Image 1 (cartoon, rainbow, N blue to C red):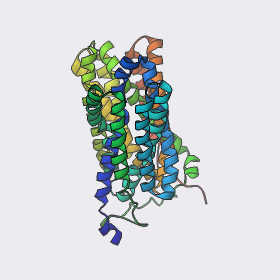
Image 2: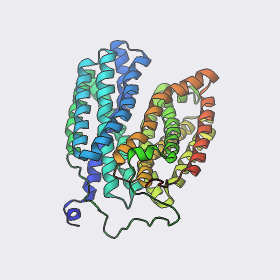
Image 3: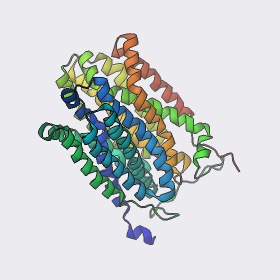
Image 4: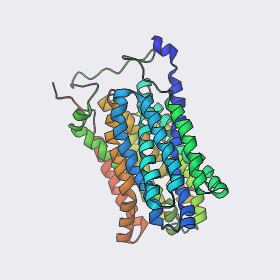
Length: 407
């Protein structure tokens, strides 16, 4: 096709990687929490409110952006997301001295900005790479998990040398330049596009299938809710441990806080690699088999390693397995959404499915804190999480590409 000769589809992947590395700044917020407490006397709970708000509005932004993208294309939506995120970070530098101001700037505006931008490279790359959806989606979202490796040390050095306000200003400028610049590259393939030498798999003659489902059609099908629960269990299990990795290291493995904090970078790297590896595996083993593998990896960490982590090594391997598995869900669920419900309304459809991640992100920390407070130990919480993983595996066996029963 002429359009394919003009547009090298791998340019979309490069742009996606750059954008997602920038959006990964969301996971680096924890670097601000200590300095905020020290400078302004914020409590631990107060410093956590902006992050919780950003997770929630991340999911909200995904839904709004998905609808807009499906109508207007990815470029406008991505640039708008970059502007929101950049302005949110800049305003955070002005408003950070009040909790409400930081929640508004970083949590609401920043979270919406990430949500608007995040959906665009995923939907765009899936449309350009129908022949390797899992691999490309994993590559596209790799940066979001690995962004902490760049922005964590950068923010730490900037805060120490220039202060909190100037650090937010620098982050805002970076977002405006690189997120908006990457978004300006995006375009969708022409109608009927398929890579040279590739043909879509033939549908089974035994079932009535529909290539592209509207959001209303998708949400009227039971398979959407099964996928939603699978995503919720997988995301909640990972986020609960990722958010409590240091306290688990201190209380279970008897590490000092500084040593435990030193392991977070390795976990972040495995989070990113989990997206690459599991996405690629899913193109060979199939999506369902790979999701079962993800839950099985969790069970190794929750039942064997973390409850018995009497050393730094066991604790580190345990949290790295959790990060590695968690990253896989972020790579596989967009691909499964496209496999089940098509790509025409993928932005909106995945936005609705992504609410499972949003609820897990907001509720996960509360859930593990409540379980620990009720039972007296993090180890007990891991057994509850393991039961959810088993339930997730059962749901995977029930999950299947839906049949279309409409006219």
